Amino acid sequence: MIREFDILDRFVRDAVFLGDAFRESSTLRHPTDQGNEREHAFRTVVSKYIQRHAKVYKRAGVEDSSTGEWFRQQDVVLADPRITPHRILNDDGRVYIDPSAVHTAIEVKSVVGRQVLEDAMQAIADVQTAPRRRQADIHHVRFPVSTGLMDYIPVSGGVFAYSSTSRRVKTVSKWIESWCQGRPPEEWPKFVTIADLGHFEWCDPDTGFCVPWPSKGTELLMCFQAQRPHHPLVALSAHLNYLSRFWWVPGTEFRLGDSTIVHGLRVGKAIYPSGVTAPPDTCHHPCLECQRFATD
Image (cartoon, rainbow, N blue to C red; front, side):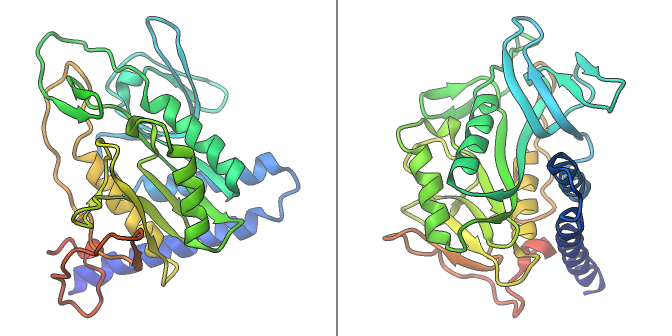
């Protein structure tokens, strides 16, 4: 139990830290300084919950090293530092990186309305569709996408915001769903996390189970609405932890990583789309927060 409460306390402290960083940065006069401080706070927290072989880069430019094709500058990039080429700028540590090394990209926003969220999702879509060229002839995996199977694992991505102009889960869900309509699931954000509202992700309409990586195009959007301030952070870290199990660079040996946080259990109030039934509740712990305890 001591370890469980230690993990619980860590999430609570980190949620407080993010909230304090947002409020304190509001006193800064320049919007860029506000954004930089809030991105720094987010990177500090996220770095605690990812696999150790990944590094967190700030405002990284994703560029194909062979063709020069540009996939935007992403606010936060989780990438494998062992894979070259990296071009790290001397001025402030920003990096230009080939998509072959990128695992997950995250757009960080202070407050999202519909247009800001749509712009962030478009940025994520661009990098998620970046080709990860193979560096060896041996095919290690077959990864399912809407058009069939790929011989590499695509880049994943999502959006983190401190707050939203709407306080309604239904409204934010419509923003996300409307933008995704007519687009292949490879372009959909894997998650949208709003720190003071909840964590949005996809679910299987037949079972109600979470789908951390939509591929069929039939997945529907659900939300873990916050009942306590740390709930969205727990859900986000669980999601990133799941995605990290599949981080793999073409041409290297594929090894399935360990997941230290169970994915798909309740954190906050689970809100399902119309017609979707919640999966059976097999958790009998009074806390209902098994994700943070890595228990079944």
